[in-house]
Length: 397
Image (cartoon, rainbow, N blue to C red; front, side, top):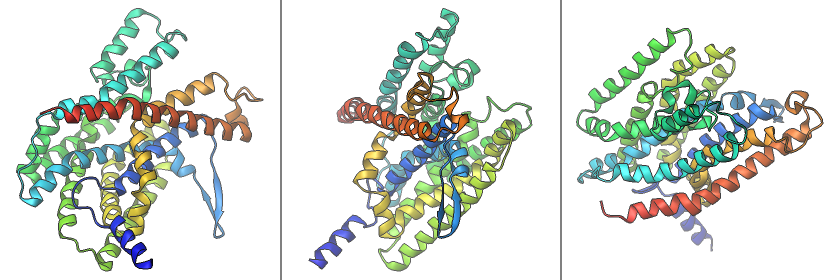
């Protein structure tokens, strides 16, 4: 009996040999949930705290800096996009073709993205008369349909649609250059790394010299080193998963890498949380973007190759399900939270219950926002997103 349990545990926690990296399911959801928690905190002002072993712990630094983990999501995207090519090179196989890449990405993103825009437009923007003229609505739609909406204030900062969708604009723009960037990195990794990294560093330096960085902080050039750090992490991981032995020393070493990276991220988050003022906060984002991406990449590698218990806690059926709905959760949560508050649901005593500190309202509002968002996300994921993705995968390249 015991031997069977030990064998099952070893099988579940064995180092990955191609295919999915289970621990990254948990990492994906943690990062998406951190962004979700930030947006819900903005609306509820609920800031939990507790005492652990006599030490007072407040979630305030994590909640008020949740926006930082969009960077982690983009880093993970670069990692997962490049991983099949890194693994092929390590195994001495022919690298996968880029044929069909754009169709697969389109089917993964666009249908449910369009659904989100349509629902918000017809159920929120039009009934609430958020567009003063027909042209304002038309140009907002044109920007979103072309994924150029991060370029314009009217379709990013001030859009009556879904402000969280700027990330999809950056991601789709990166997809356009990914085959070129991946080929360059495979052939000349150092030159490609320095080239993409230099563009990002120069863009951020020029941005920091401007009096207003509102329209600069979240543009694709400012994230190019984040993406290429994802490439590097994928290449390193592919080498390590092939060479690392399944022994206690290796597991402890990579676990130490994970906790060292997490410690660095905690210090980075605390530093960003202590920053005051809108411009200073955006400047902090720009200055911390590169070290955050390096530390997060190390955390990915450490978590994926560390102790079996860590890999199992991050990569299991529950985290797999949560990771599966995380894309939709990211798209829908802010819409749900804003509309519940606008509709005064749940009802409150004060006109501004978040400012009045109505704890009952804060907790119930948080639970309803999260619960409804998860329900919508699950339905859209399993009824629309995944069937379309499978259909695209079955088609011949």
